[in-house]
Image (cartoon, rainbow, N blue to C red; front, side):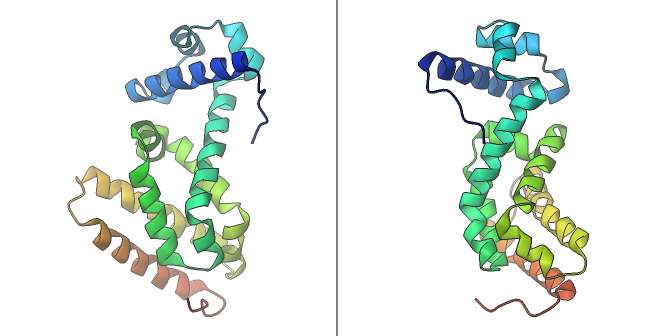
Length: 190
């Protein structure tokens, strides 16, 4: 993660940019957000924005890094212990605790690039490296991991018709059984 100035003016500027961006996320799709609109809403000029970020994508990458860190805080220990049900349950609890902007960034089809980048960040982390080492088919493990979020997104789209506990239990069964089928060895008992 980037090291930011402790200067109060810089922090205020960054916070203004973030607030403006989050407002725009709730109103628009990413490809509809311009630097001009963002800076006007943040009450700064374009030059000020470019003092801190090289592009809108650069700014968004910083938010992605923060969310990767948050997710790993919630599920990293479960991943290190090969606790698939714990990973899934705590990831879903994390998603449930997200504010409206975070949920849109992670679950809305128009922001799928954001979710994919966050997923890659989580999967490249040390706790998840072990999952890939235990199989000859890392791309299949990656696909299963991505399926976890698609199951959650579908649950949201369908109005959360099944209880949360059922969602996590059933998703865990699907993922555990699938992973066990391609694992090089037995998954350590919890």
